[in-house]
Image 1: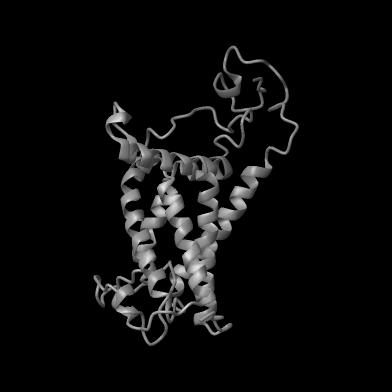
Image 2: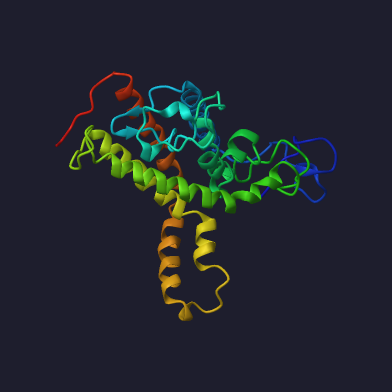
Amino acid sequence: MATGTTGPAGNTGTNAPGRAHIPARHLRTDRWWLSPATTVTILSAFIVYSTWRAFANDDYFAEPYVSPFYSPCLASKCDSMPMSANAPLFGDWWGLSPALLILIFPLGFRLTCYYYRKAYYRGFWASPSACAVPEPRGSYSGETRFPLILQNIHRYFFWFAAVVAVILTWDVLIAFRDEHGAWGHMGLGTLVLLANVLLIWAYTLSCHSCRHIVGGKLKHFSKHPVRYRLWGFVSRLNGRHMELAWASLFGVALADLYVYLVASGAFDDPRFF
């Protein structure tokens, strides 16, 4: 791989001794910038949307649907929500949107995710933007310094994300009940929430930390057949981790948007039975 000399000044980076002296910054002729540009666009749009919805503190419950951004509600301001989705641990003193109390866990899980780190490092920081495209800086410390060393807490965020996935699964079960609490209801919102939770579970279980938890530290798979089968299943999901990361990101945003539109009266939820 040959790189140029238009990088940072000095004898580091692309100007390091032994590097080929080529005037061009790189020799790629394809549209290498398209992938990082797409990443920046999509993630920026999600950040704007999720920030608006997190601080909106309104239109997050439409019987029997609960927005995944607000479940479970940990403040007392969610009295209109069913008790199954309302756990006011913070009482009345929390004056901000209750979504801010719960979103830190799934967002922390995604922020420290191995794939997302690669995506936004390349997209926002050009570290590097693409293969064979040098970084616009002369030194590299990786994730050995603050604040990036905190990325190592990803393995702990996995457990919180799994708990949130369990709670959202319960919300899907509740979505099969009508406004009177009787089972047998199914609307378009039920299917939207069901698709969302399936994508969230697939993304969570495909996580590298989950794969290590299931099959790590084993010297002989033959002595642990159950864990070996689970490891094989998680490994197959892990091979699609990138696709599941994006699909679940769109899924959770669309699920919240659907609940918002129904709760705000934009349209009525179509019911199948």
